[in-house]
Image (cartoon, helix red, strand yellow):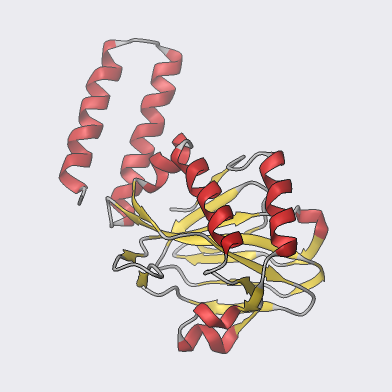
Length: 226
């Protein structure tokens, strides 16, 4: 399931992100990659141990905690601390698969990467190329969103970032361990929750909403791992 989330960050938060990123320490993006990914990766990242990365990561996680669409789509159990990357002219990230388990730096905790997420910080007209292309059974899906918008997609998807040919592409990326590890089950729960919301908007306080909500939570109870 691929879901786009509009306005995860406000315009003011995006401006703050960019100001902090301008003074942040940047390192070779291959520093956080496994062998296969490092072969096809050419970009830069903010040092994940830096104060700037922690500040911006905390801001994003706080925003996600208050984003109902993210909660509904991801059913998050753990969120890997957000990382930040930069692509300039000629930089790219070839077809790759994210590691299935990620160790949270400086902690004993690991995150199973059920869901991958990319939060766009540059506006689409600020750079050419740089599309995130996600592959699934229905084909390839190019994603290039306004600054502050985010896409979440299954962590087991092959994906790549096309070469940037003009400008600078700034983004945050991270992973989510969901309470529901199976993507098809998450999709079913997401569709049901969205339908319940639409019914409630059309027929406020209708008894059917309570019955459908009961079905949702009983299904979640069967699928969830906490």
